[in-house]
Picture 1 (cartoon, one colour):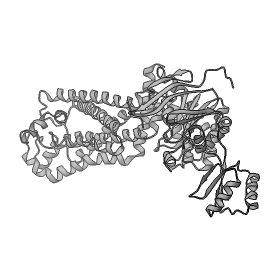
Picture 2: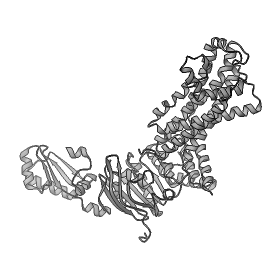
Picture 3: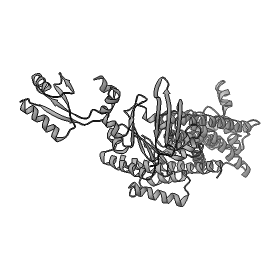
Length: 318
Length: 268
C-alpha cells in the first residue's frame, strides 16, 4: 500500500441541509488508495447523503471534495469516469436479463463489441451468474440481484467504488458472498467506501471506520482502535425476587441494575471461563438465577461509548 | 471521439434500451393503441351514420352517411393516437426516474442528454408505428386517403413534428411526476383535446365560447392540416403555419422544461 499516492477520497468541512434539517454538519474524512473505508451509523445519520454527494448525485452546500484526485464540483465527469456506485436501491433494469444489463453497461462504457463481450462473460463468471445470465432480473433473488448490481458497477473498471449498505436485507449466506466479493476487489487495488449500520460488517471488512451520528463524525480509527473504546460485552442476569437481586448485587461487580425488571448487568468478555466463574460465585452464595443472556458489543455499544446516547431515538426513550 | 460523437453513441445505446423495454412490456403499447381504435369503431359504427348526415359534402370527401364520417374522423383519430401513445411516454419515463437505475446512469461518465434523448426517440418511433397501425385499420374499414407523394411526405412531416412536441411534453410530465401513478394520469387531458377541437365534428357546430377554444387550441390546426393533406379538404391560409408553429413552440418549451427537471432531479 503506497501512502504517498493522493488519497482516493478527501472531504473537508462538508455541510448539507435539506430545508431546515441539517443532514451533514462539517464532515472531514480521508480514504487512502487501495483500502476499505466504512462509514458506520444508524438510519438517518447522513450516510447515504454523504455517498450521494461524493458520487456527484447531489451538491454539497459547502466544503471541499475530491475523489480519485478530481474535484467533485468542477470536474464531475472526471469523478464519474473513475467511480462505481452501488446504491441501496437496486440499480438494475428489471425488464432485462442479467447479461443484457451487463451489456448495457459495457456499451455505456464504450468498451466496444469484442472487449465488451469478454468483460461481460468474465463478470458473469466471477459473480456466479452464468446460469442466470439469460433470465430476466425480475426473477432474481435478493442476493443475485445484489451480485448483478455489483458486477454492473465493475464493468467500467472503476478505481473507487461506493457501496451504500451493500448487505442490508440479505440473508447471512448472501451476505458472506458479498463480503468476499468486496475483499477480492481491494486485492485488485480498488478503493472502497462503504456505508453500513452493522458493526460486524465494518469490523470484518474495513481498514478504517468513521462513526457518523446526526451529521457529525464522532469517532474514527481502525476497527481495533474503535473496539478498545467499547466497554465490551456483558452478561444479563434475571432474578426471581428483589432479595436475590440485592444479594447478588452486593456480591458481584455490577455495571448496571434494573430494579423493576430484576436484572443485573455484569461486564464480561462472554468466554466460557468467565461465565462459569460467574455462575460458581452465585452457586456458592446459593443465589438462584432465573435466566441468563450473554451480550456481545454491537453498534449500540459503540454509539453509547462515543456519543453517550443510543443509536435509535426509540431505544433512547425507553 | 468528439463530444458530439459520444452523445450520438450513448443516445443510440439508450434508444436500443428503451425499444427493448417497450418490446418486453407489450401490454403498455396495446393499451395506448387500443384507445384510439375503440374510439374509431365507436364513432364510425355507433355515431357515424347520424353524424355523417350532418356533414358538409366537401368535408365528407363526397361520401354520404357513415362512409363520409369515416373519411372525416380518421385524421382526427390519428391525432388522438399521438395523444394516447405519449401517455405511455410519461409512464416509462416515470418508471425509470423512480427506479434505482437512473442514479447509476447519473454517476456514469455518459453524455448527459442521452437518457432523455433515448426516451424521446423510442417514443417517437412507437407513436409513428401506432399511427401506421391505426391508419391501416381505418383503411381496412373503408377510409380512402388520396394524397400525392409530396402530400404523403408532408403528412408524415407534420405528424412527426407534432408527435415530437407531445413526446417532449409528456417526458416533462413524467419527470415532474412523483410516482408512476401520477405520470399515468397527468397527460390524460391530451386525449380529451381532439374532442374539444375539430377531431370529431367541425368546430363551427359548437356553441360560442367552446367554439373559439376549439378553433384556436393547438390540436385543431394540426388536425385540419393532416385532414387537408389526406382527404383534400381546404387547409385554410393559416392552419399549416399554425400547426408547425404550435408544434415547434410546444417542443421547445417542453424540451427546456424536461431538461431543467432532469438536471434538478429531486434527491430521493
